[in-house]
Image: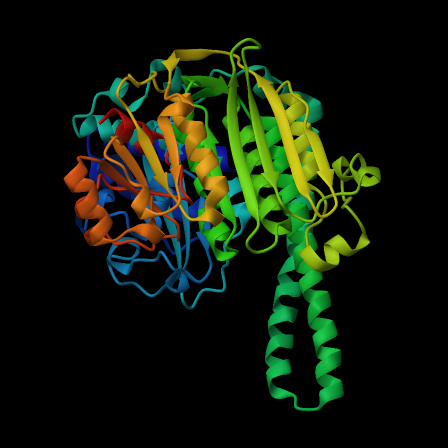
Length: 546
C-alpha cells in the first residue's frame, strides 16, 4: 500500500521538479496521510538554520539559539516523540509551534545521508482534540518513507543552490528502487527474513492492542483513586493500578524488543565522525546522571581515527542499553564511567561502561545474558524492566565481531566491556599531540571530585602532557606562578582567585560541577568552561593548545 502511495506521490511531484513550495506541499500531505497525523512540517537543514518552504510563507529557525525540541532533534540526530508537548522542559512554542496551533503531541524525525549528515527534519503533530498518541511503532512506520523523502529533500536543497556533494549526497544515494545494500541488507531480503518481518509486525499490532486498553484502565484507576475515600477500597484500587502499569511496562518491553529485532534485520555499516558520535551518545544521559547526583566520567580516546566505518545503529543501541542499566542500578551519589579506547595494535576499539551500582552475583552473571532474565527475583520489583536489554546487546556485539564481557561483585558495581574490530578508518588521530614544552597545569578541585580529576588527567596525558607537568591543588593558596594553565572547579571560583591568575599570567578554565549551574556572565576573566556532565575532550584540547 505504501509503495503505491509513494509512486503516486512521485508522479505528482514530477510536474513541479523546480518548485519547492509545491514539493513541500505534496510531501507534507504524504506524511499526514501515511502517519495519520493532523499536521506535518518538513524542515530543510541549511546549518545554522532550518528552513520550511510553505505556501503560508518561508519560515526560518536558528539552531544557534539552542532552544526547543526541534533543536534537540537537530543536535542528537535521533527520533523522539512527546505525548504532552507543552509539558516538556525543552519545549519552546516560538520554535516548536510557531503558528500557535492547539497541538498536543509531537513526533520529530531526523533525515540523514549515508554519511550521517543531517539534511532535514520532519515534525508531526496531533491536535488537542485528537486521541492519537505517538509510540515507537510510529518511528518504525516512518522508516518506510525515509528513502523517498531523502531524495526529494535533497532536490529541494539543490533547488535552493546547495551543492549535492556538500550535503553528503552522491549518486549511490539517488536510486530509490535499487539502493546499494550490504550483506546485512541482502540477508534481510530473504524469504525467511520476510516471514520474520511479518511475524514481528503482527506481534507488534497484537501487543499494541493489549497496551491501549491497559493505558486507559490505568488512567481510569488513577481518577478512581482520587475520588474514593474508603481506605480498603483505595488499597484494592492501588493493587489494580499496579497490575495495569505492569501490563504497560511488559508490552512496552516487547515492543522495544521487536524494534531491536528490526534493527538486526536492517542495520548496515556507514562512516561516522568518531568523537561526535560517541560524545552524543554519552551526553544523552547527562541530565539523568545529574538528577541522581551521579559522578559521570566521559572519555573518548583522542587517538581514535577521525572517522570509523561501523554499524552505528546497532552500536548506539548497545551503548544506550548499557548506560541506561548503569543509571538504573546505580544509587544516588554513585559513579559511572563511559570509556571508548583505541587499541592500535589490534586495530580495534574498546567500549567500557563501569558503575558503582548494586552489582551481580557471580552465579547469576551468565544467566543475565539470556532473554527475560534478571539478576534475581527482586530486581524487576525494585527496578522494573523485562530482562531483554542485555540479551539483545550481547547479540548485537557478537554480530559486530565482539563479545560482551562482565565483571561484577554485589555491592561493588559492574563493568561491561567489549572490543570491536575496525572495518575501516579515514584520517589520522582525532587530536594530534600538543607541544607540551613549557606547559604547567594545575587542577584546583574539591576532595570529593577525585573521579573527575582522574578523567581530566587521563585526557591531558592522552594529549601528550606528561604527568609531572600536572599538579593537583587542594586550596587556592597553592596556586603558583610557575603554572601556565589552571583547571578551576566551580566551588573555588571567585573574583579573588581570578585576579590572582591574572596577576600571575595563568589561563583559568572553569569546571562546572553541577548541571547547567553557571551563567556566561560568571565566566568573565576565564577561558570559558567545561562541564563534568558533558564530553569535554575537544574543549580541553583547544584550551591546552591556546
